[in-house]
Figure 1 (cartoon, rainbow, N blue to C red):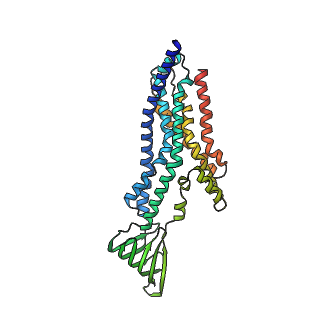
Figure 2: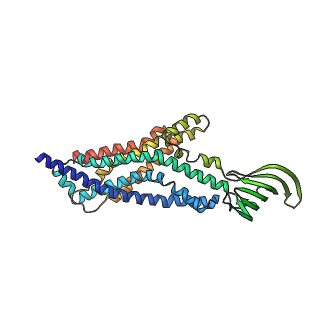
Figure 3: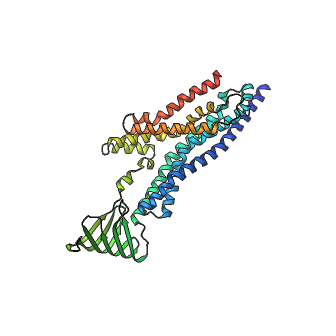
Length: 373
C-alpha cells in the first residue's frame, strides 16, 4: 500500500514539474525568438530593400521564412531557461528540499526534464532536417524572382528606372516605353558605369535577369566626356551585367537549403571544385545539423544544478544564470566553428566541442549536487 502511494506521488511530481517546464519553455522560446527576429532579421530586411530594391512584401516573406531556422536556435535557450527557473523556484520555495526528504532523489526529479528535453531535441532535428531547408529554398526563390523582375511595375508605360552601384551612385538610367509580362519594349539606357565615357543603348525589346539586363535588336552609342560620338554599333543581342555578386548570393546559406544527407552528398561531389576552407565550413555545418538539436537535451544537465539555490536563499538567480550560460555557450560555439572553418580543428570536433564542454561540466555539477551535497 505504501509502495503504491509513493508511486502516485512521483507521478504527480512528474506532472507538476512538466507543467512548469512547458509554461516557461513556451514563454522563453517566444522571447528569445522575438529578440533574434527583431535584431538580425530586421537588419536583413532593411538591407534587402535598400541594397537590392526588393519589394517590401517580398522582403517580409523572406524574413518570415527564416523563422524555423531561428526557432531551432532558440529551443535550447528556451529549455535551459525553463529548467533553471523551474528548479530555482522549487529550491527557493523549499519544495525541492521536501521532495528529497521524502526519498525522491535529484536524479529522479530530473527524469521528466530529461524526457521533455529529449523530445525537444527530436523535434528540433525534424524541423532542422525537413522544414528549414524547404523554407530557405523558398526564400531564395522569392529573392531570385524579385531580383529578376528588378522591382519594375508590370503593365506600366513610359517610366524611368535607375540602377545604383555599390556606392549608391547612379550606374545606369533607364527609360522604358512599356513593361508587361516581364518583357521590355522601347528601351533607352544611359550607362554611366565606365569611366571617361558614356554609353547610350537603344533597343526595341529587352528582358530582365537576376545578374544582367538583356536587349534585342538595337544600337549602342559610345560618347566621350566632351560629348563627341566615338563609336556606334548595331547588335542583335546584348547583355549588361549588374553589380550584384549573385554567385556568392546563390551559394550563401547553401547548407541551410539541404538536409543532412543531401548536404553530405553535396560535399562529396563538390569537394574538388570548391576551396578547402569552404569545404571545412560546409562540413562543420553538416555536423551541426545533429549537434545543435542534441544541445537541447544536454544543456538541461548543466541547468538543473545551477538552479538549486543555497539554503535560505530568497533571490531568484535563474534568469541571470540562464543568460550567462546561453552567452558562454554561443561564444564557445562561434569560436569553435571559426576554428573549424580555419581548419585548425577537425570539422567534427568543431561542431561537437560546445556539447562536449556542456556535457562534461553539467555531469560534474549534477553529480556534485546530487551525491556530494
